[in-house]
Image (cartoon, rainbow, N blue to C red; front, side):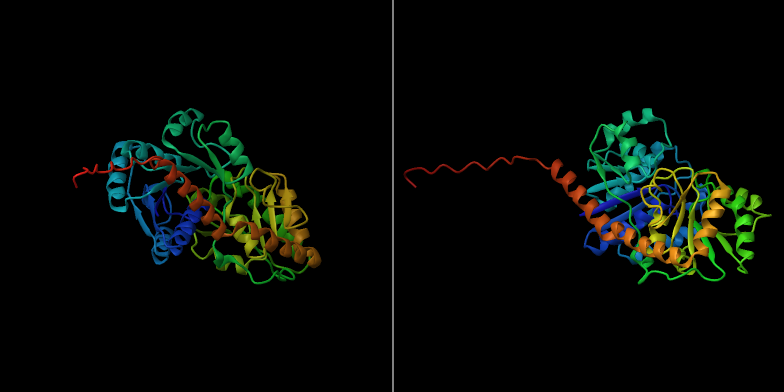
Length: 378
């Protein structure tokens, strides 16, 4: 099967990581996979280095990776022409859009193959009225969480398939962690945006480092992620004991170095970074918002705290890092919870959906050739 996935740009966001992981899995299973970005990373304020690393990884995995280079993502006609040229080369059996923006050029390009849309968040980034057009283009929607499915059911008029997110096997830890390090590393991963609410982590940083310092410990708080709002966050972090690492292509190594994973988002779809953390055996401190609540089971693999509450966040971090028995139990729970999110299972579920859609497009009845009449004289 020839599978074409479309995203906004190659960057370190969760949706983009999933797309690249799936492309590798599809190619590994013998399918022809291609990932198309609408724009170059630099054109939308993302890191070119991360883009190069991700495209390289996809290609080494046996799939194609390319960018349409659209400087203006609202140039639907230009985007459609560029997309049509790419599709002529790829000749996909199915197109999977991982950005709603991709649907407009797809509609104009008229590829005449099944189209799938995954909305990767529990909130809409476009007017609900847009579904009137989407429902004409899309053959099936994919939901990545219960909240995402509920959101789609309010607007979608085509089938919705629930397929949970997954992370790369390179994050898989062999065994749980017994205790946090004496000088622990606290890690947050994700695109710098209002959704991630990193200012709450900045405000929690000083009280939690002071509490650990009282135990004779030095905490290192790191945020890995880039994006258009990175410079603003850097200005806010000038007086906070936090390291801004920028966009990284070695998040798996950072997870192995870390002792605790933190997510302070205001809302989520189903964060890939949280799955990666669980696979790495990291206990998770996260806000009790949609998406996070489906991953973090309090007392089992992590702790949920109210959003925008730096005091609660700091307390949860300190308590988790200060109790070795509790920490070890949460690490075991994280590895157990991560078993639900294998990239193999995620890829298989997508392939099943694609086959169903392709089969549904095929003619159901074939006209049998007329039998040649035979003359009695023959």
